[in-house]
Image (cartoon, rainbow, N blue to C red; front, side):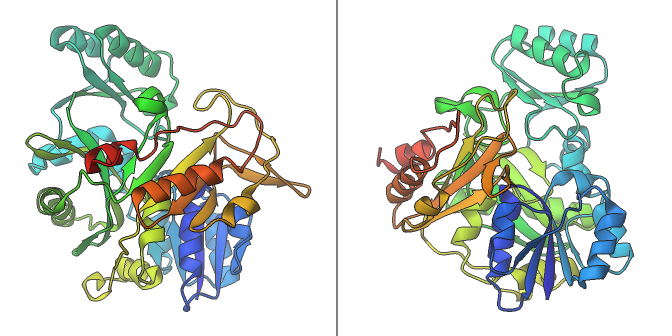
Length: 429
């Protein structure tokens, strides 16, 4: 089988890397892919953008693709899965209607309220003045979210009323998120520790993956502006057996069952961002695709063949397919361009990846790179996901940062505290 992976980031490199390990796969094609995917033994990249639906369809026919895996949220929200499946192609990813769980925060919150799925209280506003009035009446802390897709950067956890009002004005009046920020959702501030639970779904069956924890703020100790994610680790100790059971029983299974009951069966990956509060898990957000960088720490721990799982999600029969994980922890550290998540320069030469990957347990996933002649250079804000496994979490952390220190590009920066929360919780700090 040939498998097409739509997208060009670290998540897609990790997916292609895991898919290529399957004996049933002849070739993994990235569209448009990245140098990491192209370097795989079974890898090939084709310069077709994921939003070019006709181009993707033509590529599937030309290369005789047996399965298409859609990585990013934007093509899903625009209906790429519908477009391809209606043409008879096997597709991993939810339909456009189901993808509204991520494409519209207002849709997701209304869905959760309708079906009693635990989440923060909220209000939706199309007027900046009315949103500001709500903040003044209810006070802070409060969470301000752009309603639409904003590449993981449309959320402000405002600790003061002034910060909340500034975020509202920036989104609704300043237009920093474009159409995605014309409507905002204001949410109750939840206290607790966050975790990510991703699950495979075939419209009926739900199979949770290993737990993980993302790190959104740009700087150590969760300071600085939100990013698309600066690192992750798996498993997340905050998700003990009881929390995992409640996430499945109270969030994941009801979501998939209720989506089916509303006529939009959910097939693909359901990502539940969870806040573990004093009263139990509550949904921070739903995403409709593999997390980034959670994928980069979950898939290296997966011991079973991923391809039968992806096919079963698309066709049905997921309950009959094994999904297994090893006990080895995994840590990913994002190396970012100077200035990210604000303005940053591109074209900085990258060195040291080969040396880093010679270390035990280390794999470097390309997130924002390109080839310039024979040189690998930066091409995005998040440049590399430096990932490492270890017998223990401290060993995985040490290996990941040891690898980071071998990789060089101008103005590179990263968080230096990935995994610290887990160490505190485990009593190993």
